[in-house]
Image (cartoon, rainbow, N blue to C red; front, side, top):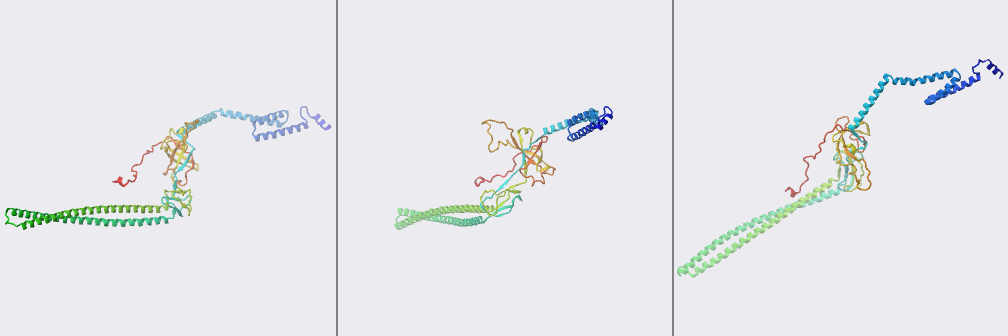
Amino acid sequence: MSNINENQANDPPGVPDAQQRMTLSRIAAALEKRNLLAEKEGGKGDDKKEGGEGDEDKKEGGDEGKDKKDGDEGKDKKPGKAKKFFTSFLGILLMIALVVLLVIGGLALWRYEKEHESTNDAYTAGRTHQVSPRVQGLVLELWVDDNQQVKKGDLLVKLDPRDYEVALERNQASLEQSQAQVLQAKGQLAQGEAAILQAKAQVAQARAQVDQAGANYEVAGVNYGRNSSLYGKDLRAVSRADVDTTKSSLDAQKAAFDAAKANTEAAESNVKAAEATRDSRAGDLEAAKAAVDVAKSNVDNALLQLSYCWVLAPVDGRVSRRTVEVGQQLSAGQAILAVTPSDVWVSANFKETQLEKIRVGQRVEIPVDTFKHHPFTGRVDSIQNGSGATYSLLPPDNATGNFTKIVQRVPVKIVFDRDDSPGSIKGFEDLVVPGLSCEPVIDLATTSDRGDHVMKDQPAPPKGKHERE
């Protein structure tokens, strides 16, 4: 203690002793360490506060406090330099350029939004052709697998054809029998025609006999009249026996004439009977021909039913939802699989407030979520004639109960480009499947009418026999 006091006595006035200098050094080191931590954390307010405390320590003494003060003055000079930069000509020019760019970007965005309509309620869609057998039967062979590519007319499933082959043979036998009946009816008709000819010949013969009998009757009458006249005038010219003889001859010729006329009438009746028989046999022939037509129809139907045992692909596409297996008993009309063609489109549900400028033929950009790096292009194909709620299973009845206005959506059909353009779907037909999410953007500045119309030269339905006549 005596030494310390002696040292304190020897120190000049106003200079801190060793113990005070040690204490101040420790305080300065602690403050410096605290400032370093504050700078690392980025707390500007803490830096200022600690800087203030450091200034107080610096005032109490020491070169370290002076250095800290100089550092704080350097920091205070930086905001002034930034402020000076922004008030300079270059800073003002940069700010003006930034404002101009912002205005141009805003105008471009406003114009883009004005000339384009988009929606995220859009999905790819396609047709699905349900395949079902037209006859019942046992699955004998299965020729396709899940997701297999098929062509129109390819064999998908083969049913057991034996029952239908038996039915075909039975109907073919019935057809042959009907054709034999036609031949028989034709023979009977020919016989009827021959009978008519024979009856007509008999009529001609009977008429000739009538003519001959009439001539004989006329001669007998003349002879009888002459003998009667002579016998009345001169008894010696003819005898009574001559008169009686001519009278008997007259009566005989009259009887022969009446008999010839009766034979003629009988022959004519035979002709009518033969004609009636001929007409009946002609009717039998027509009935036999009709039976042949029915038998042919039965054969065609049996052949058609047999062909249905081969279930073929209705269109080009890929097999999906296959539920059939070999050995399964199928009924007519039972769904066994589906064929999905590659012809897909986009069904975009736009709000009713977006439909004002949407027209058929407008160009569309179609970003599909599955192909983020290949945006497709297309055009508006058609707009549904009614909102989605109109064609729903249970359409809303706004005339009953409380009403809440809801923005309706109308489906818009968008088709992909299939040419050689960069955004064409060509080459992606098998990858773009129905049900994918997309966000189509319609360019309202482009439009062209598709020109919907019913195609000419449409096939007419078949007409019946009475209609054709």
